[in-house]
Image (cartoon, rainbow, N blue to C red; front, top):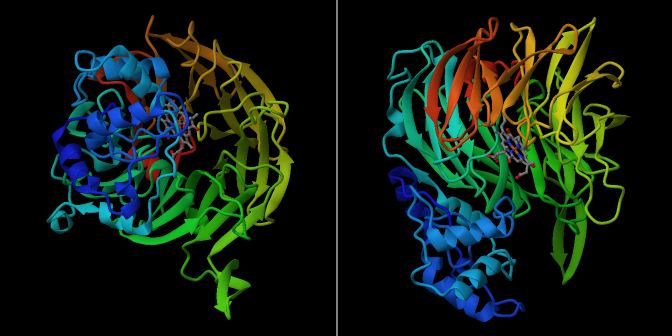
Length: 537
Ligand code: DHE
């Protein structure tokens, strides 16, 4: 329903729209709901050409229940009625009867049966490459410090801006895939960046030559991507299908791992994958299976025999151990997501409350990746947005600080004892906490609070107390990232007619303001490739 009509993504998407598997050509079956048959027919007539016969997306985004989780039905209805400005999504209020529009809006939230498939052949067929991009020179085509570059993801109109982190000027702006999510990931030298979209697209972009190098669709509903510390591999975590997918640095498919239990009987959505560079491995969180996975890319690592290979003799299946390369650590509870401690020996993970039965309280645990077991429970009050915590030195130890989405507080945990040393109140629940080695404060938003979403709280890392607040009355302030030297903090005014505000991190004075369309996140090349303790990586 909601898709961009911008040149770049449009042209590339059309290439990948061609159904690559026979399954993709089969119209979705009209499930049992009343009125469904006509909704299916309406969909085929008015929507399928852009959103795909199986609702898996095409020039427009996927319209699967998984893809629509974040769009309220009332909003979906409005989009079908009135279209979406700055996109090629037209409104249907003058062509369709209100009852038809309501039926369509209801129908796209129903699962497609049978569930749409995305095979290895589909992945391979989706890949597009920019001719000549590989031969471009290995130096920036623009004048600024390439290490102090910011990549700003503008969710409002699905663009990316590249900002010079010394002059605070936009060097370049380009259209992205629809709904990028999570941190873009950089290659070690900072030349290339990989973006992941919720619809499964991975885009490799050459920051120095300002061009897309290649794109591939790893899945139908993706969580995030990781790039190996040596820059050779890219891994994608999918909800749909239930897979982890490995690519080489040019986005050629290398291997698919089915996210199943060892016996292959249960499959899980994959919550997230991260690079553990010092361990030369990827670490994977599974949402529905109580296991954490580690997949090594160390050429010297011994092979791991963990899978079951099926030999078929005389019609009889004989299971025997086989090489898959996944080191599985069994857990009591699945992990929704996690972050690493600074030496990458531990993952600190959280599990969302189960809906329905259960006490509904989030749980968090510390898992030692070498001992391969849980070593502590984590005392957090509410579920954090994933990857939003930071670590820093305090009082002779290292602490982890993370916002929780429940009450509006920052939990500070001693990483030696795994005990809470302080719970710091903020005016409301927020998503992101950010700092830098060279700055005194940790910056927390309260963007989930209707009354305090316009307030940033600066926490003194020495005293663990709120030291200052910054406000942008009536607007939403969120997601801070520092310059390479930690002198300036860039903060989002998280609105369609939003901005990036540059603050002097010492005087807290506004230095500059750059207009942006809902800048959901910004990422400094240096801080990311050096795994600064004050930001996500
Ligand atoms: Fe995120 C990062 C999961 C909702 C904006 N988010 C991440 C990561 C995960 C995650 C696992 C780390 C991936 C990485 O960087 O490789 N996000 C989830 C959820 O499970 C959740 C709660 C529900 C969902 O819809 O998936 C969720 N996230 C949101 C939003 O609603 C946000 C605020 C707006 C949006 O555009 O989706 C949002 N998430 C972000 C951002 C990052 C992120 C900006 C990267 C932060 C960073 O600095 O690295």
